[in-house]
Image (cartoon, rainbow, N blue to C red; front, side):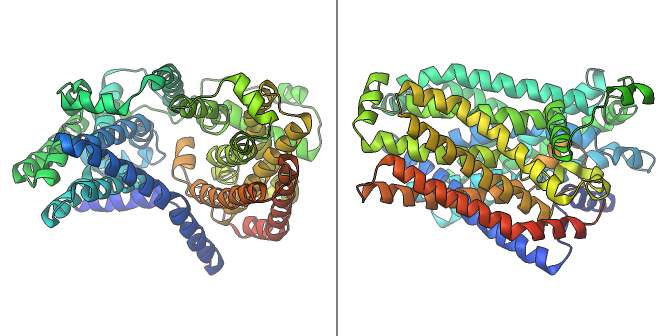
Length: 555
């Protein structure tokens, strides 16, 4: 037990963000954390809680009020498996500490148990927040008693255990019995393929949204046709037991819930004792099968460029050639139309193209505001989610010293990284948005102003994200996915971006609705506001960015 405790504490420290190096950075991290909590975490939790509350109140008269929260828990567990499989594979088999652990007199189950606990601790903060919001929404909707609230605490903490344990069991079986995955590059490629398959399934399922009728769905549940729940309750037996525990105050369900979790963890540890060393010995952290070019060949292939262009292309090549970075930082810029299309499908009143053209030409408030504020919101959200800027420094990892000693000024490196964070989201947004404007016959001057709004919004997010990442970059990581998922700077950047967008959009809304100015002039004013905000960010962070890099300790 002592070995497990020490190993777990060590792994948690290694996975998490490093402590701020001085008081100034510590204060900045506290401020950014407050933005993150109140700008992203709380709004999402409140929205989920309200959704569960409404579902509970709708289902309560039919006597099946627990199905709403049960559905949410199954979705949370399912996504935990999908996004946790890559994390568990890398933590169990491809972390840099493996070669140091193997010579120690440690049992396999001790290593696996410690790594699993560390991964659970670091990867499930958001899931636990969502579970809490679901329970609160359900409790308010069903008017739970005090005992039921107390019983729910156990499940809130432990609900993600079984989904992550499934990932551990799958990884141990695959690595123990097959030679399919021998380095982390392979698991990254498999993860990328799975994500694209998920996107394709999502695109194919959007067409069914237009036939969605909540009333008929509720009637189907009440009639006993619960095929989805019957299947998912077998896959995740902890969910119905947890719901029954705090919904009915059933102590037997609580005992069964604890027993199911214990059995799944025991199975994972028993398999690790039999198969873990067999799968981990002989692995490599990356694929070294590529041929190395001779020095003469490398020099012959080189060509001279300006500092900015060379550094810019260095960043682009890293992003494009690394599967995890390509998926999470590049490809995500082009996926937002799927969600816009889904929102359009679930609307009860859907406009035809001819109607959109007519309403926009006749200054319809809803349509013109949709195009004006939509471009700002989409641009900011896409630029914040892709992690291009908020991980610009963290992506350097153990090569951070390269930034300090390369004969390129920090100012040039800063702008080159910002340019990468501007170009890709701008292309991803405008490649869809401009054709949509052309189809709706939006005037050319409006299209130009909307384009300017998009670029200004993305520029603000890009420069702000790089500055945030420079305060406390995550330079210690074993794999590229850890550099993205375990870096809180993306979360901070997203919170500030969303808060700023809300202010700009509300201001633009009242400006357009309460005055007689045109949509073009409103867009022009918003462009000026965004340009001033970007300039302020540039002026305030120019010296701070350089100081942050100079003071940052090398890894």
